[in-house]
Amino acid sequence: MQNTIRHIILSFFVFFLPISASFAGTSLKIDSDRQFDFAEHYFSNGEYFKAIREYERFIYFFPEDRRVKPAMYKIGMAYFESKGFKEAINVFERLIEKYGRFRHSDFRFRMSDPVTKAYFMISESYMKLNSPGPAISDLHNLIALTKNTDVKDECCYRIGWIYLETESWERARAYFGKISEKNRDKYKLEKLSRELGRTESADRKSPSLAGFFSIVPGGGYLYCGRYYDAATAFVLNSALMYAAYESFDSGNHALGGVITLVELGFYSGSIYGSVNSARKYNRKRTMQFLENLRKNTKISLSGEKEGLAVSFQYKF
Image (spheres, one colour):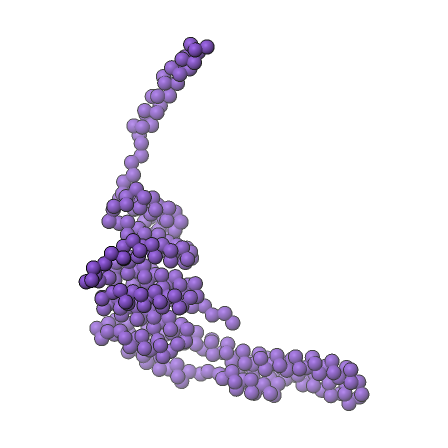
């Protein structure tokens, strides 16, 4: 029995040891340049989750490489481009925590530094999540930390646009006004100021007036330019009013009461619909104005991919 066991062990070493040695001789060596380029290849081709995996592999195997910081930034951007905005915020915050906390009193953020761009992209991510408050707070934090005038100016420009997106016109003007003289041409502030002046003369509808005009059924819709709805509301309400009158006049009070209750519902609905129509009309005009403003005055910002723009979605 013992001889049999020894024979099996000897056979294992004879047949498998050379195979193991051959594999050891052809072991794969990870090169930092190739690994980083591999991750960059996936990112440039839009394969963001594969890029994230390869950037993380790069960081794990080469933690002292000077490209760890841009690799972390690219991981955040990969999440952002794949609409993982919360994950992107977490990565950008880790990047800031690791590389932005050790500062001397004379430390200056640079526009091209991944830490600076991480602040910008955290703000962008919050805007994609429809959270303008945290987006603005993030930029205020960067303003407080940096002494770089260019960085401060871009923060003010971004905050101004966030306020534009939320129709806070005066606050937007205030932050555009904080931009230094040397960068006013860069951000097209003179043209932007002229365009913003048109908001005061923009064609808008008063929700209060729409409700007042709705005393006459369909009048509020007519005021808002919704002619089909105005005609429908007028005909329907008039017909119900006449039916209720006829019922009461013929002594059929029960039917008249039922029709009156139905008419009250349609009548109040017409008033509410008219007020809401005025608000929708104003919202549409505002969004058209902002779209034209983006096309004519908004510049490409640091930290953004070409074509990326701040967006804020409204729900009616």
